Image: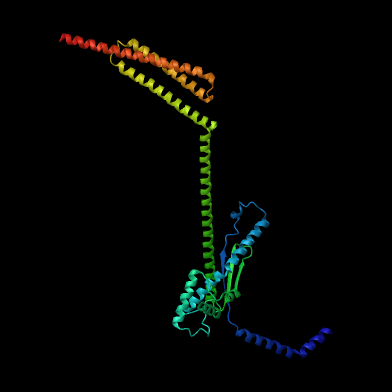
Length: 373
């Protein structure tokens, strides 16, 4: 019953409803028709913040603390992108493009459309100088204030660009998205690309500068600490010399090393002496083997005794050194040294006797030959 009453009422006013809907559609069409087209350009900047390898050595392994730190770093980067200094760089490049290009992004406002070529050239010189120096326009300077008014008329000033500029982190990713909306697709693309490039250049230069400053500071600190350490060491050395203070541990190590070196040299010289004696004996044996048979046998026996004694001396000396110069081993070591010296003297005497015997025999033979002549 109620439904049939509603349908009768709807049929009664159907033309009124249809007229209202058509009027709304037509009004919306004409309102939207006059709106300018909008083009949105996007770009993304990889930050490298969300990287597990950079957090391996973090002392605080609390995920919440790491998340807060990452959010702060992203926030800092986004605020750097919004810096007036960077947006001014974009403004300068936009106006330079429009003033020097036959196909500008936007046409000059009616207040500035009649600028003379000299005025345009002057504006380009100032904008390019500001672009290179990275300085803002001074509103206290009449000329630069007029150039700032030109930027405002073109909607290239900082405030106008910020209205359609959007900077945000892409969800939980490592990227920062930069978006700009305008009536010209080339203009939108130019703004996001230029802003991203200026941000990367600015951030890179500042990071390198901070790293260089840190390296210089640490290098200077290292030099200061090294100089202070050397000065303290010199003062300590002079104090020891002045007061006769000896470092027994260091000096004992030094003396022990010297004893080992001298002992090795002594044993080496003894071995060389024995070898030389043996070589000399071989030379003498070639002159008169028959007359020296007994002496050679005696010398060979002595050489064998020398070699045996020398080996015992080397073994005893190593045991003496490694025992930390135990005084109980010193008499045995001295006894072996004396025995070796006595054996060397005995061998040397026999070799001298053999040499003298050969010399006398040769002399007698020469005299006998002279008499026969």
